[in-house]
Image: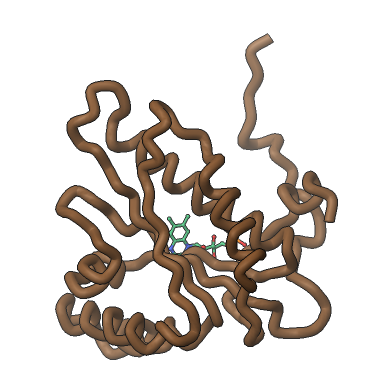
Length: 187
Ligand SMILES: Cc1cc2nc3c(=O)[nH]c(=O)nc-3n(C[C@H](O)[C@H](O)[C@H](O)COP(=O)(O)O)c2cc1C
C-alpha cells in the first residue's frame, strides 16, 4: 500500500480475525515505535506484548480493575471481553521522568503516543487491523504491577492487533478527509 494512502485513509477496527503478527512482523511494529519523535532521546516508553497464551492473565488484570474501581455491570463486561477480542495486545507504558530539567512530562507522553501511532501504522502496513483502547482499566493496580509500572509511569493504551475478520484486507476510510476547517496559514 502507498504510504500516503495509508496515512490519509487509516482507520481503527475492533473486529479481528485469529492471526497475530509473527515474530518478524512484530519486530517491524516495535522498530517503528522506536523511531517516534523523542525530545532528549529519552525513549520514554515500555511495551508489553501479550500473546494469545497470555490473554488469560490480561483478563485477570482487567477484571481486577473492574472490581477495584467498582465498575457497573456494562463496563465490567467490557473489561472481561477485551482480552478475547484480538489475538495480540501491546500494552504501552509511558515511562515518565518527572525530574527531567529539559523535557516536561507532557512531551514524554506525546512521544509514547507517537510510538503507539507508529505501531498502528506499521501493523496496518503489514495487513493487520488495530485499535487503541485505554479507559479506566489501565489504571488498575494489577495491570500496573504486571506491566512493571513505577509510581510516575502511565499506561497510555492497550493496542489490539490482529488479522482482518474478513478475507478482504484491512478497512480503510473511503477517501481522505478535507482538512480545510482545521487549518490556517500565515503567509
Ligand atoms: C489515547 C487514546 C485512548 C483511546 N481509548 C479508547 C477507548 O478506551 N475505547 C474506545 O472505544 N476508543 C478509544 N480510543 C479511540 C480509538 O482508538 C479510535 O481512534 C476511535 O474509535 C476512532 O476511530 P479511527 O481511529 O478510525 O478514527 C482511544 C484513542 C486514543 C488516542
